[in-house]
Amino acid sequence: MEKTLIQNDILIDLKHITKSFGSHMVLDDFSLYIRKNEFVTLLGPSGCGKTTTLRIIAGFETPDTGEVFFEGKNINSLPPEKREINTVFQKYSLFTHMTIAENIAFGLKIRKKPKAYIEEKIKYALELVGLTGFEDRCPETLSGGQQQRIAIARAIVNEPKILLLDEPLGALDLKLRQSMQLELMRLKNELGITFVYVTHDQEEALTMSDTIVIMNQGYIQQIGTPEDIYNEPENAFVADFIGDVNMLDGKVISKSAVEMLGTSFPCTDEGFEAGTKVDVVIRPEDIVLTNPGEGTIDGLVEEVIFKGVHYQMKVRCRGYAFFVCSTVCREAGSKAGLQIDPFNIRLMPKPQSDDERAVHEE
Amino acid sequence: MKRFCMRFYLALAFVFLYTPILILIVLSFNDSRVRSSWGGFTLKWYAQLFSDATLLTALKNTLSIALISAGIASLIALMAALGVDAMRKNHAVVVINLGNIPVLNADIVTGIILMLTMGRFMKLGYASILIAHITFNIPYVFLSVLPAIKNCNRSVYEAARDLGADAGTAFFRVLLPDIMPSLMGGFFMAVTLSMDDFVVTYFTRGAGIDTLSTLIYGQLKRGLKPEMYALSSMIFFVVLLILIAGNLIPGGAKRRDNDAVWKRI
Image (cartoon, rainbow over all chains, first blue to last red):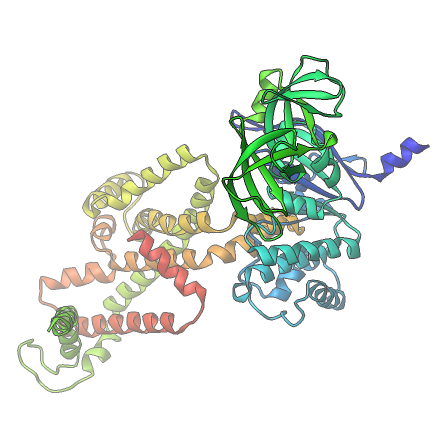
Protein backbone atom coordinates (compact mmCIF):
# COMPACT_ATOMS: atom_id res chain seq x y z
CA MET A 1 0.00 0.00 0.00
CA GLU A 2 2.71 2.39 0.98
CA LYS A 3 4.65 1.59 -2.11
CA THR A 4 1.82 2.51 -4.50
CA LEU A 5 1.34 5.76 -2.62
CA ILE A 6 4.93 6.69 -3.24
CA GLN A 7 4.60 5.64 -6.87
CA ASN A 8 1.62 7.94 -7.37
CA ASP A 9 3.51 10.77 -5.89
CA ILE A 10 6.18 10.67 -8.57
CA LEU A 11 5.62 13.10 -11.43
CA ILE A 12 8.76 12.72 -13.50
CA ASP A 13 10.87 9.61 -13.49
CA LEU A 14 14.11 9.51 -15.47
CA LYS A 15 15.46 5.99 -15.79
CA HIS A 16 19.00 5.12 -16.88
CA ILE A 17 19.32 8.05 -19.25
CA THR A 18 22.42 8.36 -21.37
CA LYS A 19 22.98 11.21 -23.75
CA SER A 20 26.04 12.18 -25.72
CA PHE A 21 26.78 14.91 -28.22
CA GLY A 22 29.29 13.57 -30.70
CA SER A 23 31.92 11.80 -28.66
CA HIS A 24 31.15 13.80 -25.52
CA MET A 25 29.10 11.89 -22.97
CA VAL A 26 26.87 14.39 -21.20
CA LEU A 27 24.70 12.06 -19.13
CA ASP A 28 25.78 8.56 -18.18
CA ASP A 29 23.19 6.14 -16.78
CA PHE A 30 21.36 9.02 -15.12
CA SER A 31 18.34 8.22 -12.94
CA LEU A 32 16.25 10.70 -11.00
CA TYR A 33 12.66 11.02 -9.91
CA ILE A 34 10.81 14.16 -8.99
CA ARG A 35 7.77 14.25 -6.74
CA LYS A 36 4.65 16.35 -7.05
CA ASN A 37 4.92 19.85 -5.66
CA GLU A 38 8.63 19.55 -5.07
CA PHE A 39 11.15 22.32 -5.66
CA VAL A 40 14.09 20.44 -7.12
CA THR A 41 17.31 22.18 -8.04
CA LEU A 42 19.86 20.66 -10.37
CA LEU A 43 23.12 22.17 -9.22
CA GLY A 44 26.55 21.80 -10.71
CA PRO A 45 29.36 23.46 -12.62
CA SER A 46 28.83 24.29 -16.28
CA GLY A 47 28.98 21.25 -18.49
CA CYS A 48 27.78 18.90 -15.77
CA GLY A 49 24.67 17.89 -17.73
CA LYS A 50 22.07 19.82 -15.73
CA THR A 51 20.71 21.80 -18.67
CA THR A 52 20.64 18.66 -20.83
CA THR A 53 18.61 16.95 -18.13
CA LEU A 54 16.16 19.84 -18.17
CA ARG A 55 15.94 19.76 -21.96
CA ILE A 56 15.23 16.04 -21.89
CA ILE A 57 12.37 16.64 -19.45
CA ALA A 58 11.05 19.48 -21.66
CA GLY A 59 11.34 17.35 -24.78
CA PHE A 60 13.97 19.34 -26.67
CA GLU A 61 16.43 16.47 -26.51
CA THR A 62 15.77 12.77 -26.77
CA PRO A 63 17.89 10.48 -24.63
CA ASP A 64 20.14 8.02 -26.50
CA THR A 65 19.06 5.28 -24.15
CA GLY A 66 16.84 5.20 -21.10
CA GLU A 67 13.27 6.24 -20.48
CA VAL A 68 11.42 9.34 -19.33
CA PHE A 69 8.17 8.77 -17.46
CA PHE A 70 5.58 11.45 -16.78
CA GLU A 71 2.90 10.35 -14.32
CA GLY A 72 3.85 6.77 -15.07
CA LYS A 73 3.61 7.10 -18.86
CA ASN A 74 6.62 6.90 -21.15
CA ILE A 75 6.99 10.24 -22.91
CA ASN A 76 10.26 9.62 -24.76
CA SER A 77 8.78 10.40 -28.16
CA LEU A 78 6.27 13.05 -27.10
CA PRO A 79 7.17 16.43 -28.69
CA PRO A 80 7.59 19.42 -26.35
CA GLU A 81 4.29 21.04 -27.36
CA LYS A 82 2.35 17.99 -26.16
CA ARG A 83 3.91 17.87 -22.70
CA GLU A 84 2.22 19.44 -19.68
CA ILE A 85 5.50 21.13 -18.93
CA ASN A 86 6.55 24.73 -19.47
CA THR A 87 9.99 26.25 -19.42
CA VAL A 88 11.40 29.60 -18.35
CA PHE A 89 14.49 30.09 -20.45
CA GLN A 90 17.78 31.59 -19.42
CA LYS A 91 17.60 34.35 -22.02
CA TYR A 92 13.91 35.15 -21.30
CA SER A 93 13.08 34.37 -24.95
CA LEU A 94 10.14 36.73 -25.13
CA PHE A 95 8.65 37.23 -28.57
CA THR A 96 9.93 40.69 -29.42
CA HIS A 97 7.38 41.43 -32.14
CA MET A 98 4.47 40.87 -29.75
CA THR A 99 3.19 42.93 -26.83
CA ILE A 100 3.39 41.62 -23.30
CA ALA A 101 -0.28 40.56 -23.40
CA GLU A 102 0.26 38.72 -26.70
CA ASN A 103 3.31 37.02 -25.26
CA ILE A 104 1.38 35.76 -22.26
CA ALA A 105 -1.59 34.76 -24.40
CA PHE A 106 0.53 32.79 -26.89
CA GLY A 107 0.10 29.36 -25.32
CA LEU A 108 -3.57 29.92 -24.53
CA LYS A 109 -4.37 31.07 -28.07
CA ILE A 110 -2.72 27.99 -29.52
CA ARG A 111 -4.89 25.88 -27.23
CA LYS A 112 -7.87 27.85 -28.55
CA LYS A 113 -9.09 29.04 -25.17
CA PRO A 114 -12.05 31.46 -25.16
CA LYS A 115 -11.21 35.13 -25.36
CA ALA A 116 -12.68 36.06 -21.98
CA TYR A 117 -10.70 33.27 -20.32
CA ILE A 118 -7.48 34.49 -21.94
CA GLU A 119 -8.08 38.10 -20.84
CA GLU A 120 -8.71 37.00 -17.31
CA LYS A 121 -5.60 34.82 -17.29
CA ILE A 122 -3.40 37.64 -18.56
CA LYS A 123 -4.68 39.88 -15.80
CA TYR A 124 -4.19 37.21 -13.19
CA ALA A 125 -0.67 36.35 -14.34
CA LEU A 126 0.48 39.97 -14.49
CA GLU A 127 -0.90 40.52 -11.01
CA LEU A 128 0.91 37.42 -9.79
CA VAL A 129 4.28 38.67 -11.04
CA GLY A 130 3.55 42.23 -9.95
CA LEU A 131 3.44 43.85 -13.38
CA THR A 132 -0.20 44.91 -13.67
CA GLY A 133 -0.76 47.42 -16.44
CA PHE A 134 2.08 46.19 -18.65
CA GLU A 135 -0.28 44.54 -21.18
CA ASP A 136 0.48 46.80 -24.14
CA ARG A 137 4.18 47.35 -23.53
CA CYS A 138 6.83 45.83 -25.79
CA PRO A 139 9.36 43.39 -24.31
CA GLU A 140 12.25 45.63 -25.39
CA THR A 141 11.07 48.44 -23.10
CA LEU A 142 11.25 46.22 -20.00
CA SER A 143 14.19 45.72 -17.67
CA GLY A 144 15.84 42.33 -17.35
CA GLY A 145 14.00 41.49 -14.15
CA GLN A 146 10.65 42.53 -15.63
CA GLN A 147 11.27 40.49 -18.78
CA GLN A 148 12.07 37.49 -16.65
CA ARG A 149 8.85 37.89 -14.71
CA ILE A 150 6.91 38.10 -17.98
CA ALA A 151 8.61 34.90 -19.12
CA ILE A 152 7.42 33.27 -15.90
CA ALA A 153 3.90 34.66 -16.35
CA ARG A 154 3.84 33.36 -19.94
CA ALA A 155 4.73 29.90 -18.72
CA ILE A 156 2.39 29.64 -15.73
CA VAL A 157 -0.82 30.77 -17.46
CA ASN A 158 -0.81 27.40 -19.21
CA GLU A 159 -1.12 25.73 -15.82
CA PRO A 160 1.69 23.26 -16.40
CA LYS A 161 2.23 20.39 -13.98
CA ILE A 162 5.93 21.18 -14.00
CA LEU A 163 7.72 24.46 -14.46
CA LEU A 164 11.29 24.11 -15.67
CA LEU A 165 13.60 27.04 -14.98
CA ASP A 166 16.97 27.18 -16.72
CA GLU A 167 19.20 29.58 -14.75
CA PRO A 168 16.42 32.16 -14.96
CA LEU A 169 18.13 34.63 -12.65
CA GLY A 170 21.60 34.33 -14.12
CA ALA A 171 21.54 37.68 -15.92
CA LEU A 172 20.20 39.72 -13.02
CA ASP A 173 22.15 41.66 -10.43
CA LEU A 174 22.47 40.42 -6.88
CA LYS A 175 19.70 42.51 -5.27
CA LEU A 176 17.21 41.68 -8.01
CA ARG A 177 18.23 38.03 -7.89
CA GLN A 178 17.55 37.84 -4.18
CA SER A 179 14.11 39.40 -4.44
CA MET A 180 13.28 37.17 -7.44
CA GLN A 181 14.32 34.13 -5.41
CA LEU A 182 11.74 35.00 -2.77
CA GLU A 183 9.22 35.74 -5.50
CA LEU A 184 9.74 32.32 -7.07
CA MET A 185 9.30 30.58 -3.74
CA ARG A 186 6.07 32.53 -3.15
CA LEU A 187 4.83 31.61 -6.64
CA LYS A 188 5.60 27.98 -6.10
CA ASN A 189 3.61 27.94 -2.88
CA GLU A 190 0.69 29.84 -4.41
CA LEU A 191 0.47 27.75 -7.56
CA GLY A 192 1.30 24.40 -6.06
CA ILE A 193 3.21 23.19 -9.08
CA THR A 194 6.47 21.33 -9.30
CA PHE A 195 9.55 23.43 -9.99
CA VAL A 196 12.68 22.02 -11.54
CA TYR A 197 15.37 24.63 -11.31
CA VAL A 198 18.79 24.62 -12.92
CA THR A 199 21.58 26.76 -11.53
CA HIS A 200 25.30 26.81 -10.85
CA ASP A 201 24.78 29.21 -7.96
CA GLN A 202 24.95 27.19 -4.76
CA GLU A 203 23.51 29.96 -2.62
CA GLU A 204 20.45 30.16 -4.86
CA ALA A 205 20.03 26.40 -4.58
CA LEU A 206 20.29 26.43 -0.80
CA THR A 207 17.80 29.29 -0.47
CA MET A 208 14.98 27.93 -2.59
CA SER A 209 15.06 24.18 -2.92
CA ASP A 210 13.25 21.36 -1.18
CA THR A 211 15.69 18.97 -2.81
CA ILE A 212 19.09 19.64 -4.33
CA VAL A 213 20.62 17.34 -6.91
CA ILE A 214 24.35 17.94 -7.19
CA MET A 215 25.72 16.93 -10.56
CA ASN A 216 29.16 16.71 -12.06
CA GLN A 217 30.23 15.37 -15.44
CA GLY A 218 26.96 13.62 -16.08
CA TYR A 219 26.80 11.87 -12.72
CA ILE A 220 24.68 12.62 -9.69
CA GLN A 221 26.99 13.32 -6.77
CA GLN A 222 24.37 13.67 -4.07
CA ILE A 223 20.64 14.17 -3.64
CA GLY A 224 19.28 15.69 -0.47
CA THR A 225 17.71 18.59 1.34
CA PRO A 226 19.78 21.78 1.47
CA GLU A 227 20.64 21.01 5.10
CA ASP A 228 21.77 17.47 4.26
CA ILE A 229 23.90 18.62 1.39
CA TYR A 230 25.53 21.40 3.37
CA ASN A 231 26.05 19.55 6.61
CA GLU A 232 26.63 16.03 5.37
CA PRO A 233 28.31 16.20 1.98
CA GLU A 234 28.86 12.71 0.67
CA ASN A 235 32.11 13.39 -1.09
CA ALA A 236 34.80 16.00 -1.52
CA PHE A 237 33.27 17.40 -4.72
CA VAL A 238 29.97 18.17 -3.01
CA ALA A 239 31.69 19.65 0.01
CA ASP A 240 33.85 21.83 -2.19
CA PHE A 241 31.02 22.90 -4.46
CA ILE A 242 28.61 23.85 -1.69
CA GLY A 243 30.17 26.69 0.24
CA ASP A 244 33.81 27.22 1.04
CA VAL A 245 35.72 24.44 2.72
CA ASN A 246 39.10 23.56 4.04
CA MET A 247 40.12 20.24 2.58
CA LEU A 248 43.13 18.39 3.95
CA ASP A 249 44.75 15.01 3.63
CA GLY A 250 44.30 12.94 6.74
CA LYS A 251 44.80 9.49 8.18
CA VAL A 252 42.37 7.76 10.49
CA ILE A 253 44.08 6.86 13.77
CA SER A 254 41.14 5.40 15.65
CA LYS A 255 37.36 5.59 15.78
CA SER A 256 37.55 8.98 17.42
CA ALA A 257 40.68 10.59 16.06
CA VAL A 258 42.18 11.61 12.75
CA GLU A 259 45.68 12.79 12.06
CA MET A 260 46.34 15.78 9.84
CA LEU A 261 49.21 18.23 9.63
CA GLY A 262 51.02 15.92 12.03
CA THR A 263 48.48 16.60 14.77
CA SER A 264 45.77 14.35 16.14
CA PHE A 265 42.27 15.83 16.04
CA PRO A 266 39.36 14.27 17.91
CA CYS A 267 36.48 13.42 15.58
CA THR A 268 33.23 11.45 15.57
CA ASP A 269 33.03 10.30 11.97
CA GLU A 270 33.06 6.53 12.17
CA GLY A 271 33.13 3.88 9.53
CA PHE A 272 36.79 3.99 8.63
CA GLU A 273 39.41 1.52 9.65
CA ALA A 274 42.47 2.82 11.45
CA GLY A 275 45.17 3.68 8.93
CA THR A 276 42.80 4.61 6.10
CA LYS A 277 43.80 7.72 4.17
CA VAL A 278 40.93 10.15 3.93
CA ASP A 279 39.96 13.63 2.79
CA VAL A 280 39.17 15.82 5.77
CA VAL A 281 36.62 18.57 5.23
CA ILE A 282 36.14 21.46 7.64
CA ARG A 283 33.80 24.41 7.06
CA PRO A 284 35.45 27.80 7.71
CA GLU A 285 32.70 28.83 10.14
CA ASP A 286 33.26 25.67 12.21
CA ILE A 287 36.76 26.71 13.22
CA VAL A 288 36.96 28.53 16.53
CA LEU A 289 39.95 30.79 17.11
CA THR A 290 41.46 30.67 20.61
CA ASN A 291 44.47 32.19 22.27
CA PRO A 292 47.74 30.55 21.18
CA GLY A 293 48.32 27.20 22.87
CA GLU A 294 44.67 26.79 23.92
CA GLY A 295 43.50 25.16 20.68
CA THR A 296 44.37 21.86 19.05
CA ILE A 297 46.88 23.49 16.72
CA ASP A 298 48.57 26.90 16.56
CA GLY A 299 48.87 29.08 13.51
CA LEU A 300 49.70 32.53 12.19
CA VAL A 301 46.93 34.86 11.01
CA GLU A 302 48.07 35.96 7.56
CA GLU A 303 45.16 37.86 6.18
CA VAL A 304 41.93 39.43 7.46
CA ILE A 305 39.08 40.58 5.27
CA PHE A 306 35.98 42.24 6.67
CA LYS A 307 32.90 40.69 5.04
CA GLY A 308 30.11 42.59 6.77
CA VAL A 309 28.62 40.01 9.09
CA HIS A 310 31.91 38.23 9.72
CA TYR A 311 35.64 38.39 9.20
CA GLN A 312 37.30 36.06 6.76
CA MET A 313 40.78 35.07 7.85
CA LYS A 314 43.61 33.01 6.51
CA VAL A 315 45.47 31.17 9.25
CA ARG A 316 48.59 29.23 8.31
CA CYS A 317 49.33 26.12 10.36
CA ARG A 318 52.32 24.00 9.40
CA GLY A 319 52.15 24.96 5.76
CA TYR A 320 48.36 24.71 5.32
CA ALA A 321 46.38 27.94 5.09
CA PHE A 322 43.09 27.45 6.92
CA PHE A 323 40.18 29.50 5.74
CA VAL A 324 38.35 30.76 8.85
CA CYS A 325 35.12 32.73 9.17
CA SER A 326 34.43 34.30 12.52
CA THR A 327 32.64 37.29 14.01
CA VAL A 328 35.68 37.79 16.21
CA CYS A 329 38.58 39.50 14.53
CA ARG A 330 42.20 38.44 15.06
CA GLU A 331 44.83 40.83 13.78
CA ALA A 332 46.96 39.86 10.85
CA GLY A 333 50.41 38.80 12.01
CA SER A 334 49.19 37.58 15.38
CA LYS A 335 49.28 34.00 16.56
CA ALA A 336 46.11 32.08 17.29
CA GLY A 337 44.98 28.62 18.26
CA LEU A 338 42.51 26.62 16.20
CA GLN A 339 39.77 24.65 17.94
CA ILE A 340 37.42 22.39 15.98
CA ASP A 341 34.48 20.52 17.47
CA PRO A 342 34.83 16.77 16.82
CA PHE A 343 31.46 16.55 15.01
CA ASN A 344 32.46 19.36 12.66
CA ILE A 345 35.33 17.35 11.24
CA ARG A 346 34.05 15.33 8.29
CA LEU A 347 35.99 12.45 6.83
CA MET A 348 35.54 11.31 3.24
CA PRO A 349 36.99 8.36 1.41
CA LYS A 350 39.70 9.19 -1.10
CA PRO A 351 38.61 8.52 -4.68
CA GLN A 352 39.55 5.00 -5.71
CA SER A 353 38.99 4.56 -9.43
CA ASP A 354 39.83 6.89 -12.29
CA ASP A 355 36.14 7.46 -12.85
CA GLU A 356 35.69 8.71 -9.34
CA ARG A 357 38.82 10.79 -9.56
CA ALA A 358 37.53 12.51 -12.69
CA VAL A 359 34.66 13.67 -10.58
CA HIS A 360 37.00 15.61 -8.35
CA GLU A 361 38.94 17.34 -11.04
CA GLU A 362 37.33 20.39 -12.50
CA MET B 1 40.85 75.57 -39.92
CA LYS B 2 40.61 71.81 -39.37
CA ARG B 3 36.87 72.15 -39.08
CA PHE B 4 36.72 74.10 -42.34
CA CYS B 5 38.80 71.47 -44.16
CA MET B 6 36.52 68.73 -42.91
CA ARG B 7 33.42 70.57 -44.10
CA PHE B 8 35.01 71.49 -47.40
CA TYR B 9 35.98 67.91 -48.06
CA LEU B 10 32.50 66.69 -47.22
CA ALA B 11 30.95 69.33 -49.48
CA LEU B 12 33.29 68.33 -52.28
CA ALA B 13 32.33 64.70 -51.93
CA PHE B 14 28.64 65.54 -52.18
CA VAL B 15 29.22 67.81 -55.17
CA PHE B 16 30.90 64.97 -57.04
CA LEU B 17 28.18 62.53 -56.01
CA TYR B 18 25.15 64.63 -56.83
CA THR B 19 26.15 66.98 -59.66
CA PRO B 20 25.74 64.30 -62.36
CA ILE B 21 22.31 63.41 -61.03
CA LEU B 22 21.35 67.07 -60.93
CA ILE B 23 22.48 67.51 -64.55
CA LEU B 24 20.41 64.51 -65.55
CA ILE B 25 17.32 65.89 -63.85
CA VAL B 26 17.81 69.30 -65.45
CA LEU B 27 18.23 67.71 -68.88
CA SER B 28 15.03 65.73 -68.46
CA PHE B 29 13.13 69.05 -68.37
CA ASN B 30 15.14 70.57 -71.25
CA ASP B 31 13.07 71.46 -74.33
CA SER B 32 15.95 70.79 -76.73
CA ARG B 33 17.39 67.65 -78.24
CA VAL B 34 20.89 68.99 -77.82
CA ARG B 35 22.51 68.49 -74.47
CA SER B 36 24.62 71.59 -74.59
CA SER B 37 21.85 74.17 -74.88
CA TRP B 38 18.84 75.01 -72.69
CA GLY B 39 15.64 75.26 -74.75
CA GLY B 40 13.26 76.09 -71.95
CA PHE B 41 11.26 74.00 -69.46
CA THR B 42 9.13 71.14 -70.76
CA LEU B 43 7.41 67.97 -69.59
CA LYS B 44 7.16 66.52 -73.09
CA TRP B 45 9.86 63.87 -72.53
CA TYR B 46 7.85 62.57 -69.63
CA ALA B 47 4.74 62.50 -71.80
CA GLN B 48 6.54 60.71 -74.62
CA LEU B 49 7.94 58.25 -72.17
CA PHE B 50 4.47 56.99 -71.33
CA SER B 51 3.45 56.67 -74.98
CA ASP B 52 6.56 54.75 -76.05
CA ALA B 53 5.41 51.13 -76.30
CA THR B 54 8.89 49.53 -76.56
CA LEU B 55 10.05 51.44 -73.55
CA LEU B 56 6.99 50.55 -71.49
CA THR B 57 7.38 46.87 -72.37
CA ALA B 58 11.02 47.00 -71.33
CA LEU B 59 10.03 48.69 -68.07
CA LYS B 60 7.40 46.05 -67.44
CA ASN B 61 9.93 43.28 -68.14
CA THR B 62 12.48 44.86 -65.82
CA LEU B 63 10.01 45.24 -62.97
CA SER B 64 8.42 41.83 -63.28
CA ILE B 65 11.78 40.07 -63.58
CA ALA B 66 13.09 42.01 -60.59
CA LEU B 67 10.11 41.25 -58.35
CA ILE B 68 9.58 37.62 -59.37
CA SER B 69 13.28 36.71 -59.33
CA ALA B 70 13.78 38.43 -55.96
CA GLY B 71 10.73 36.65 -54.56
CA ILE B 72 11.74 33.18 -55.71
CA ALA B 73 15.38 33.78 -54.75
CA SER B 74 14.29 34.89 -51.26
CA LEU B 75 12.27 31.73 -50.79
CA ILE B 76 15.10 29.45 -51.92
CA ALA B 77 17.69 31.44 -49.94
CA LEU B 78 15.56 31.31 -46.78
CA MET B 79 15.26 27.54 -47.01
CA ALA B 80 18.98 27.23 -47.74
CA ALA B 81 19.89 29.43 -44.77
CA LEU B 82 17.63 27.43 -42.45
CA GLY B 83 19.28 24.26 -43.68
CA VAL B 84 22.79 25.61 -43.27
CA ASP B 85 21.95 26.85 -39.78
CA ALA B 86 20.97 23.33 -38.79
CA MET B 87 24.19 21.87 -40.22
CA ARG B 88 27.26 21.01 -38.26
CA LYS B 89 29.73 23.85 -38.23
CA ASN B 90 32.44 22.51 -40.52
CA HIS B 91 29.87 21.41 -43.09
CA ALA B 92 28.17 24.80 -42.95
CA VAL B 93 31.45 26.61 -43.61
CA VAL B 94 31.94 24.65 -46.83
CA VAL B 95 28.44 25.42 -48.04
CA ILE B 96 28.68 29.13 -47.16
CA ASN B 97 31.98 29.47 -49.01
CA LEU B 98 30.62 27.64 -52.05
CA GLY B 99 27.72 30.06 -51.93
CA ASN B 100 30.11 33.01 -51.85
CA ILE B 101 31.91 32.14 -55.07
CA PRO B 102 29.09 33.22 -57.43
CA VAL B 103 28.94 36.55 -55.57
CA LEU B 104 32.62 37.18 -56.22
CA ASN B 105 32.46 35.90 -59.77
CA ALA B 106 32.61 38.56 -62.51
CA ASP B 107 29.23 39.31 -64.05
CA ILE B 108 30.53 38.58 -67.51
CA VAL B 109 31.58 35.07 -66.48
CA THR B 110 28.23 34.44 -64.81
CA GLY B 111 26.46 35.72 -67.90
CA ILE B 112 28.37 33.52 -70.34
CA ILE B 113 28.05 30.45 -68.13
CA LEU B 114 24.29 30.89 -67.79
CA MET B 115 23.89 31.61 -71.50
CA LEU B 116 25.80 28.47 -72.47
CA THR B 117 23.99 26.28 -69.98
CA MET B 118 20.48 27.48 -70.64
CA GLY B 119 21.03 27.82 -74.38
CA ARG B 120 21.41 24.05 -74.52
CA PHE B 121 18.10 23.30 -72.86
CA MET B 122 15.75 26.11 -73.78
CA LYS B 123 15.11 29.00 -76.09
CA LEU B 124 16.62 32.13 -74.62
CA GLY B 125 14.00 34.70 -73.69
CA TYR B 126 12.02 35.98 -70.69
CA ALA B 127 12.24 32.67 -68.84
CA SER B 128 15.99 32.37 -69.23
CA ILE B 129 16.53 35.94 -67.96
CA LEU B 130 14.30 35.14 -65.00
CA ILE B 131 16.20 31.95 -64.16
CA ALA B 132 19.52 33.78 -64.52
CA HIS B 133 18.37 36.52 -62.16
CA ILE B 134 17.08 34.04 -59.62
CA THR B 135 20.45 32.31 -59.78
CA PHE B 136 22.59 35.35 -59.10
CA ASN B 137 20.15 36.71 -56.49
CA ILE B 138 20.07 33.65 -54.25
CA PRO B 139 23.51 34.14 -52.62
CA TYR B 140 22.77 37.78 -51.79
CA VAL B 141 19.54 37.00 -49.97
CA PHE B 142 21.20 33.97 -48.40
CA LEU B 143 24.04 36.07 -47.01
CA SER B 144 21.55 38.62 -45.71
CA VAL B 145 19.29 36.11 -43.97
CA LEU B 146 21.85 33.73 -42.52
CA PRO B 147 23.25 36.13 -39.88
CA ALA B 148 19.70 36.96 -38.82
CA ILE B 149 18.89 33.29 -38.35
CA LYS B 150 22.16 32.79 -36.46
CA ASN B 151 21.54 35.87 -34.32
CA CYS B 152 17.95 35.11 -33.59
CA ASN B 153 17.63 33.62 -30.20
CA ARG B 154 17.22 29.92 -30.81
CA SER B 155 15.32 29.53 -27.59
CA VAL B 156 12.56 31.79 -28.97
CA TYR B 157 11.62 28.98 -31.32
CA GLU B 158 11.91 26.50 -28.48
CA ALA B 159 9.81 28.76 -26.26
CA ALA B 160 7.04 28.66 -28.85
CA ARG B 161 7.24 24.85 -29.03
CA ASP B 162 7.27 24.73 -25.26
CA LEU B 163 4.07 26.80 -25.13
CA GLY B 164 2.26 24.31 -27.34
CA ALA B 165 3.02 25.39 -30.90
CA ASP B 166 3.92 22.63 -33.36
CA ALA B 167 7.00 23.06 -35.55
CA GLY B 168 5.12 24.84 -38.36
CA THR B 169 3.24 27.26 -36.12
CA ALA B 170 6.40 28.07 -34.20
CA PHE B 171 8.21 28.83 -37.45
CA PHE B 172 5.55 31.04 -38.99
CA ARG B 173 4.41 32.86 -35.85
CA VAL B 174 7.71 33.33 -34.06
CA LEU B 175 10.84 32.60 -36.08
CA LEU B 176 9.77 34.11 -39.40
CA PRO B 177 8.61 37.46 -37.95
CA ASP B 178 11.94 37.62 -36.16
CA ILE B 179 14.02 37.27 -39.33
CA MET B 180 11.55 39.15 -41.54
CA PRO B 181 13.48 42.45 -41.53
CA SER B 182 16.61 40.76 -42.84
CA LEU B 183 14.65 38.72 -45.33
CA MET B 184 13.01 41.89 -46.62
CA GLY B 185 16.42 43.56 -46.70
CA GLY B 186 17.71 40.71 -48.83
CA PHE B 187 14.61 40.82 -51.01
CA PHE B 188 15.01 44.52 -51.80
CA MET B 189 18.72 44.05 -52.34
CA ALA B 190 17.82 41.37 -54.90
CA VAL B 191 15.23 43.64 -56.55
CA THR B 192 17.86 46.36 -56.90
CA LEU B 193 20.51 44.01 -58.24
CA SER B 194 18.10 42.56 -60.75
CA MET B 195 16.96 45.99 -61.96
CA ASP B 196 20.56 47.16 -62.18
CA ASP B 197 21.80 44.17 -64.06
CA PHE B 198 22.93 44.57 -67.62
CA VAL B 199 25.67 42.03 -68.33
CA VAL B 200 23.89 38.85 -67.27
CA THR B 201 20.64 39.98 -68.89
CA TYR B 202 22.39 40.86 -72.12
CA PHE B 203 23.84 37.36 -72.47
CA THR B 204 20.76 35.41 -71.44
CA ARG B 205 17.98 37.41 -73.08
CA GLY B 206 17.99 36.01 -76.59
CA ALA B 207 16.39 38.01 -79.38
CA GLY B 208 13.25 40.08 -79.21
CA ILE B 209 13.12 40.89 -75.55
CA ASP B 210 14.50 43.91 -73.78
CA THR B 211 14.79 45.13 -70.26
CA LEU B 212 15.50 48.77 -69.55
CA SER B 213 19.23 48.27 -69.36
CA THR B 214 19.52 46.40 -72.66
CA LEU B 215 17.10 48.81 -74.35
CA ILE B 216 19.11 51.85 -73.28
CA TYR B 217 22.30 50.12 -74.39
CA GLY B 218 20.77 49.46 -77.80
CA GLN B 219 19.66 53.06 -78.15
CA LEU B 220 23.08 54.40 -77.21
CA LYS B 221 24.35 53.51 -80.66
CA ARG B 222 21.82 55.88 -82.22
CA GLY B 223 22.26 58.51 -79.54
CA LEU B 224 20.33 58.65 -76.31
CA LYS B 225 16.78 59.95 -76.51
CA PRO B 226 15.91 62.65 -73.92
CA GLU B 227 13.07 60.36 -72.78
CA MET B 228 15.77 58.31 -71.13
CA TYR B 229 16.72 61.31 -69.00
CA ALA B 230 13.11 61.51 -67.92
CA LEU B 231 13.00 57.79 -67.13
CA SER B 232 16.29 57.88 -65.21
CA SER B 233 15.12 60.90 -63.23
CA MET B 234 11.92 59.11 -62.33
CA ILE B 235 13.77 56.03 -61.16
CA PHE B 236 15.98 58.27 -59.03
CA PHE B 237 12.95 59.92 -57.43
CA VAL B 238 11.24 56.62 -56.75
CA VAL B 239 14.37 55.30 -55.04
CA LEU B 240 14.66 58.55 -53.09
CA LEU B 241 11.05 58.25 -51.93
CA ILE B 242 11.56 54.66 -50.82
CA LEU B 243 14.66 55.70 -48.90
CA ILE B 244 12.86 58.56 -47.15
CA ALA B 245 9.89 56.36 -46.32
CA GLY B 246 12.20 53.69 -44.96
CA ASN B 247 13.88 56.20 -42.66
CA LEU B 248 10.62 57.68 -41.43
CA ILE B 249 9.21 54.32 -40.36
CA PRO B 250 10.31 53.98 -36.75
CA GLY B 251 11.27 50.85 -34.87
CA GLY B 252 13.81 48.10 -34.69
CA ALA B 253 12.99 46.52 -38.04
CA LYS B 254 14.77 49.24 -39.98
CA ARG B 255 17.75 49.19 -37.67
CA ARG B 256 18.30 45.48 -38.07
CA ASP B 257 17.73 45.83 -41.75
CA ASN B 258 20.61 48.26 -41.98
CA ASP B 259 22.73 45.96 -39.86
CA ALA B 260 22.21 43.18 -42.32
CA VAL B 261 23.21 45.40 -45.21
CA TRP B 262 26.31 46.59 -43.38
CA LYS B 263 27.33 43.07 -42.54
CA ARG B 264 27.21 42.14 -46.18
CA ILE B 265 29.27 45.11 -47.24
